[in-house]
Amino acid sequence: MTLPNYFIADLPPGATLSPVMIREACQTLKRNRLAYLAERSTPRLIRALSELAEDWLQPDFPFRQLALELGPAATGFPVKTLANGLDSFFRRLTAENLRALLVQDLGHAQRLDAVSATGAEVESQRAALATGPEMLVHIAAGNVPNPTLMSILLGLLTHSAQFVKCATGTSLLPRLFAHSLYQVEPKLASCLEIAEWRGGNAMLEEALFAEADCVTVTGSDATIEEVRDHLPPRVRLLSYGHRVSFGYVTRDVLFGSNTRKVVAQAAADIIAWNQLGCLSPQVIYVENGGSVMPVQFATLLADELARRELDEPRGPVPTEVSVSIAARRNFYEVRAAGSEDTRLWCSPDSTAWTVVFETDPLFAVSCLHRFVFVKAASDLTEVLHAADAMRGCVSTVGLAALEDKAPPLATQLARWGVTRVCPLGQMQQPPLAWRHDGRPSLADLVTWTDWEQ
Image (cartoon, rainbow, N blue to C red; front, side, top):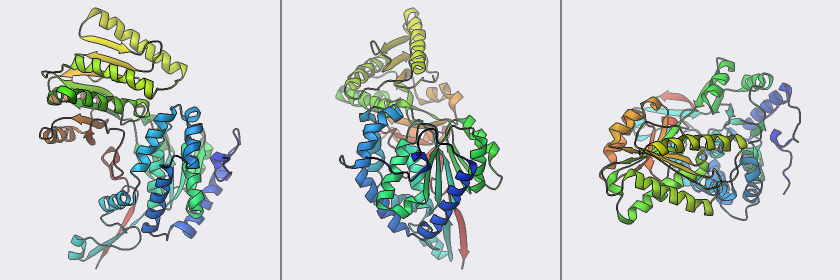
């Protein structure tokens, strides 16, 4: 299957991009939006997107096949990791979930189509219309593809023209999604542009930002600050910066066969996207005092990662990553040799997975690529004190607790600043209506017009 040259990212490698090309592309997107998207009803958009998602879940869908064929070389993720990640995303993209997202964020499923009112607004003789940006620009991160796909989805729902700027070499999956949209809804796809170039190209980005009404940035804090410094004052910036996540396992859930279930859930979160997303756990905290001690949990987790490596291998990584992992392993090998408070398990003859156990609960930043810490803790209060340096930067906590014990733990985590608490094993599978970094996905994009009757 050969992709036609519908998008800038389809141009041959080495093609020269110019500010004029970027400016003209944005202006074309705006015209196409006015003609094909601005008046498209939300129910029609929902139907088109949910049906496209169903296509992506079919093994014989040509764009899915191409993603799995070309994806490993382009993204660094092995086939099974890519397949699982795509399934996780598109399985959530149902008509029911899309309507629920609209109601949650905007109060009414057709708030973007016409002035609408909830029951409470009717009683107070008020109504409102939500309007998306005319021109929405996404500066996409290159580590995992699903956030970029989600950004495109949100832009379509808000009836916005969109320009997606990918980092060099990371545009394959957004391109394939855009081409699949073009196949079934060419007019919608004509309101979308995909491009890639190395960050910091001031001339291209100045031309892009001059056409934008709203810019979303997903990436490092340094990238966000660089974009902020170059945005015109009138342009709204929505940023999603560096975040970390961890797991928390209470002593009460570690009993009998349930122990291995919890271990498998932790391993699933570590393996998903090779631990590269901000939702991936870098540390698993395990409470002391149960029938399974934290060091035993670490042993079982190492066994599970070894087993899962046979079925879903991590795949090759750049030399500098392997060197970094090897150096961290050497550090903990030395520490383990001198103290029983540290233990190390790792894949033989490769850097495929690493488990470090420590009795010290201080939060440790992982070098990722399936390198995880297991740390002992007396309770959640101790954990939050030990993780205080990361306060405000924790995205998700995967919680393994008995049903009656979970609510107060979730409340404690929320008041400390965690923006998402979910069951362990689901950290990399947020619901479609997830409030990214604690903010409403759709409501952040729109501008409201209130009508007081």
